[in-house]
Image 1: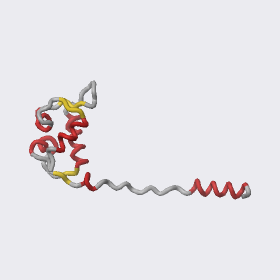
Image 2: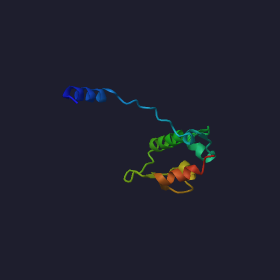
Image 3: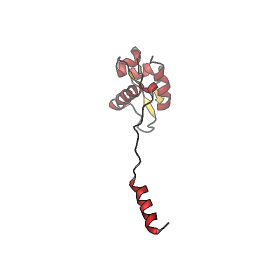
Image 4: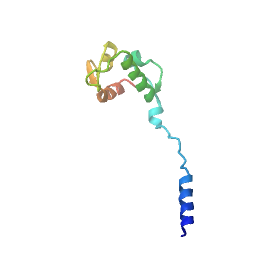
Length: 105
């Protein structure tokens, strides 16, 4: 190949942008779940997707300043969250997911 053809081939390769496809959310996360009465006191009683439920739960934690100052992974439960967490006063964020799943159907 001549040097001109090589330059044109490289220019074409750079000029052709790849099309990005929109990411599709997982249907299981988007399926509405209904919180029981204990969890409804924190996030509301309407059926909502798990993603929204998690957002509302974290909004509640942040608004009430329940995240531990030193170890950010821990949540210090108030009375409403203590009922959701099965009576525990301190729960780490990974354990929190497991405990919250017991209160949805």
